[in-house]
Length: 274
Image 1: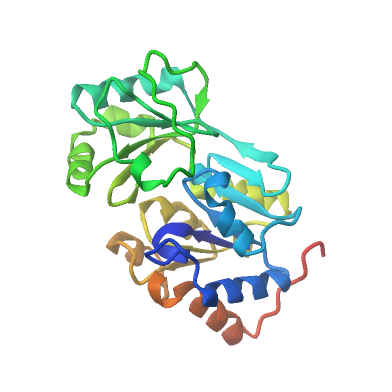
Image 2: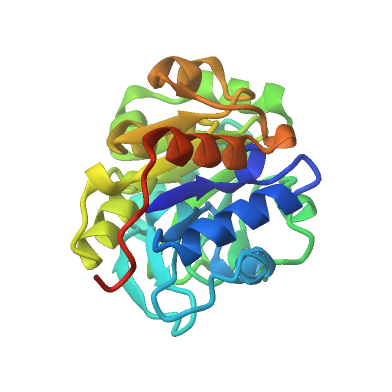
């Protein structure tokens, strides 16, 4: 299985998949390797990428919401799901509100910008790919949510990180997925957790996993994978995490590593359904 972060990993800076990356991933998929996109977004927001790679067969899955939901691409049936209740979000809401920060709450279908706080930049960056329904925190339905996003200028995100008290750090899995996005997930939610469930579904384990990433929210899967690959444009902590490095997202780093790895190993993967 090959697991791929999107932004600054598989995607170029213009948010597209290069022809080179597309061609190589389609080739390995035909050879029997599962190709799995791993994203913080819901599946509808990346459906055009799934279609481009041809990941529309019954055996194709996506890791969404940074591991909170593992979903089948065709049936849309989940095989793993976890999240945070509204009650568990309450201390985070008060911290963000008291410090005049922003807050967007995501369930598994849409985003709820919290209107009794200032407006974030999250909706501006998503181009209408996810429905937004603005509510006050008190109006927020009492159910389970995938995550909370703080989307602001990088300097403001720096300020949020510096202000987070220890008790909140223990209550949530906190990752900076992009310079302008900080995410709060349940303590057990991680791309690695989603991939563990998906690997188990196919009677595989992490010894069968190659993963690519560049940012803090990719650390878990890069550490868990037998081959965890850091992009050349990764943050320093990710580059230091693994001995496997490749070129940048702008220079087809994914395709280059996949091609060289299997050529060097002389490896031919077992067919799906073996």
